[in-house]
Image (tube, rainbow, N blue to C red; front, side, top):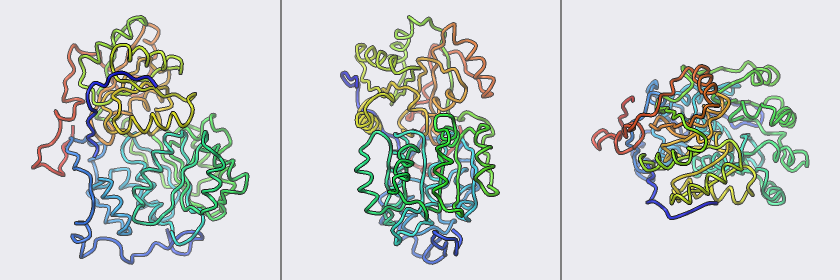
Length: 454
C-alpha cells in the first residue's frame, strides 16, 4: 500500500408462490402499506438525505413505492435504513417478477440498483425459521462478494436471516465451521463455493434461489464450466436470476440450458451512464505522470479511481503519485487477500482520496464518493471501458471519466466510441465543476426528496 500525507478529508455524500418446495409462502399477512405506517417509520434510523441531483437512469420510474410490493415490514425497515427511498427503474421491473417465482434475465446499466433488485425479493421469500441454505448469490470477484454481503446484512438486520460470504484467499476451515452453524444466504465466488459443495459441507439440495450478478463475467472463460457444476447441486425447481450490464453469446447459451421461460428485462437504451462526462487527452507515454499531476492540481476530486493495464504498472504509478505528495492506495489481484480487504475497506470509508488499481475493481464495486475515474492506461476492449467508467456516476449521480491516450491507443479510442455509441470529447482547459462536484449540483433543502434530470 502506498501512502503519503493526506490532502484533506474525503467527503462522503452517500447517503414465492405458496407450495413451491424450499420456499416460504408469499403471504400478505402483516405486509404492505400499513395504517400505522407513521408510527413504525418514526423509529427508523435513516442516513442523511442525499440531495445530489440524479439523472433519468434512476429517476425515470413509474412512481412505485417499496411498500407497493407487499414486503415484510422488517425488510422495509432495512430498505429505508439503507437510505433507499424509492425503487429504481430496474427494481420496479424486476422485483415483482422475481417475487412471482419466475426465472429472470435482467440487463441494466452499472450503478442503477441491480443489487437491490435481487436481494430484496430473495430476503422476502426466505424463511429464517428453517436452518438450511435457501439462496446463493454468485459474483466474479472477492471485493464484490464482500460488498454484496454487507448490503445483504444491512437489508436483513431486522429479519433474523443469517448471511455468509465465502471467497477464495480466506481460511477454508473457518468457512466450514460457519456452515455447520447453518446459514440462509450464501454470497460467494464460484471456485470457493464449489470446493465447499464438493466436500459436502455446503448442502444445496434445498437452495431454491440462485442469482448470478455480473453474469457475463461469471459465464466467461475465466469461470469455464463452474456455473454448470454449481447448478448440478441445486434442486430441479430452483429459481435462477441473471443480472448484468452486458450479455454476450455465452449468456444466451447458458439461458437455453438452465433457465425455464425466463422473463427478459432490457433497460439499456444506451450503454453508458447519463451522468458520466467523458474526456480524452493525447499524451506521450513519458508525459502521463506529469499530465496526471496537472489533473490532480486542477480537479476538485472527492475520491478517484485510476486504472492501469497491469499489476506492475499499478504499483509503479502508486509510488509516483505518493512521491508527488498525494494520498494514494493501490490494489490488484496478486496481493494477499487480507491486504486487499483492508485497502477496500479503508478506501470505501474515505481514508484515502486516490486508488490505483487493475481491472479487479471494474465489476460492481459501488463507492458513491468516487466522482472521478482516470484511465491512466486506456483499455483495449469496450466492455472493460464501460465497466471502468461506471465506477463514477453511481446511482444516477454525476462524475467524469478522463482517458490518457497515446498514439498507439488512437484506434482503440475510435473503436470503443463506435461500439458503445458514445462520445469521448477532447479535454477542455477547465472542466465545469457542476459536471462532477456534488456541491455544485445538489438540490436546496426545500427540494428534499425531489430530483431533477441532468
